[in-house]
Length: 360
Image (tube, rainbow, N blue to C red):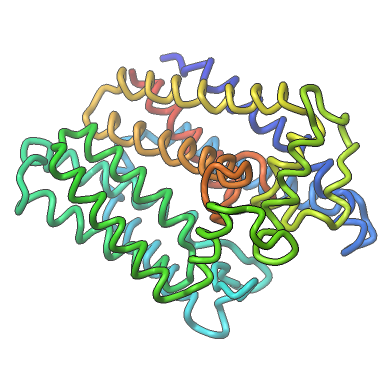
């Protein structure tokens, strides 16, 4: 049985482009922090790349039906990992958030594991409920409860960007499964209520919304990051300033290897490069949904839709936020941003998708 080769080639291309972008975007910061220009790219290759390849091959070799059996244990395990964050000796704080779990010499983000486990669990649950998804009490209410449980763990960190990706992926899955428009309208209302409550809990979120609506209101304060991103993207023009030629990565643009990395890419490769990268993510979406359409089981179909949606939704939220089309969220760009856990889980997802395609 053959795998979906276009999906594989698209994923490899995104992986390689990600390494190229990270190599350039991280050079100045690596020299400043570690006196080694290649520190971040080598760390990404050593940990994210090596473990990512292991995750990729395991995902491709293990029959996707295995994940259906593991849905509940995997979900419970990921929630336990998330709960461990709140043990002071284990949770690592950075920038006011506790998102990293330190176990000995290793640290990772449990939210990345939770994101995968959540989609696996939801795909399994939707398969069992597929005949009743239009029913309010037996399907829609339990669906809300599942999302609420996951939301609590992510809000406590806080990691609202990842929460948004997971909720949107869940909504996509629910309506591909057969949800009703009235249920969608209810989710929109609940989402607005949640947004209002989150702003009340942490007023800085209102600042992000204010900056999104009026980026020029405080260019040296709350709007500094987005305005520097605008400068980077605008400086790139059509063809860019050339690989390695970014000026914004010289300590002007915050988080140049994290959620701001697309701005560095747009500066160096211009509008043309940005269109190429966006096109690759759209092609990833197309082939992922193609795999879902040809999946041999309902669970395989839901799993493929959920995994594909999570990566593409996160990509477009990241790009949209740093381009000023959405409020800043702080989530990484899949395949591209620095972060071993994100890369490992992304490559594992690609492996699972290829396994589904192999059984089409």
